[in-house]
Image 1: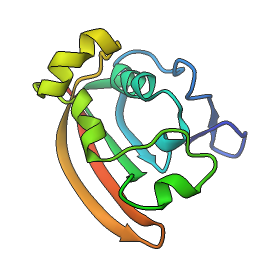
Image 2: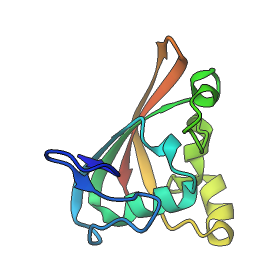
Image 3: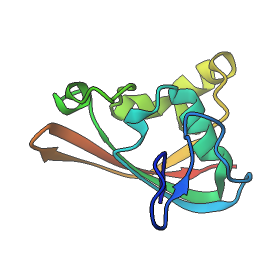
Length: 132
């Protein structure tokens, strides 16, 4: 459990800075309603990939731009939909074309994805596997 605010069982970390875990040290990340609060998408995905072990997985839940939930919360500073992840998928033409110019190092394979309906609009759950 990671947060900016100290608490029982909480690792205090600012995920808008380089993440405090070593390369290839994490097997699984559960980021439910987290990454939309981080302004730099590329840094977020690069750090997620960096700390994951080869084959490690990240389960991400994010409100999509197809609904009001992405926009209504004043602490949401980045906006995501399924296509946002194409830039980080191994072999995807978007990643292959733009990664060198955008500073994208992250490379994932989409393992699963699902969109659910909530009161605030659709949420995407996507599980990504680190390709290294």
